[in-house]
Figure (cartoon, rainbow, N blue to C red):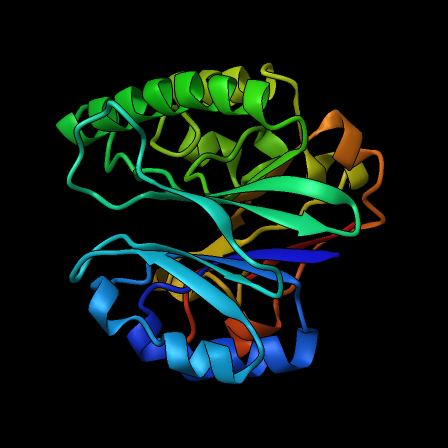
Length: 257
């Protein structure tokens, strides 16, 4: 089974790139973030033409998450139950695979803007409620994969210049603590487990020739429970889509089980 996550930064702009990537890589599951589309605008027909099912939780202009799947998508959940939030940042479903039944959660964690902003407090609050919900999900679903744009670089190795970014959003101690609390539920960061010392990134700022100079961060993650991480044979970052004309500032992250 191949699963990938990709913040596409507008599916309207990059549907063609997504279609081409699906044709080339043939993932069993592709999780998208920042679709920036209302549900009525999501291209289900185009996805179906490629042989996939799809579900979407979106809104106009901002946010939006989707799961594209070779498997039937069951027990669908939009947003964090009990947490009032107009922003569409979570969608989950269950799939029956050759590895058994797996709960798949697609997340787009708030950016936070800056550590002295209300948006940073919102990010920490969102992460707190997400972690509480996820704990319950893991009790109901023994095998689970959580993937998406977490907007957190967990360690200094995940940032091109840790000193320059020190105490900034994406790398601040409170964000990293929140990420670790998610891991402590019994999950593994698949990329770092398989590639313990690799300096690779999944996001590069459009400014300052960030991609060409490799001024990036690894903020897109695929987390799995311990049973699944032991079965992962590949965990990689595909930089090719970032080289496209009008690319997203993120690129796909992949695991193969």
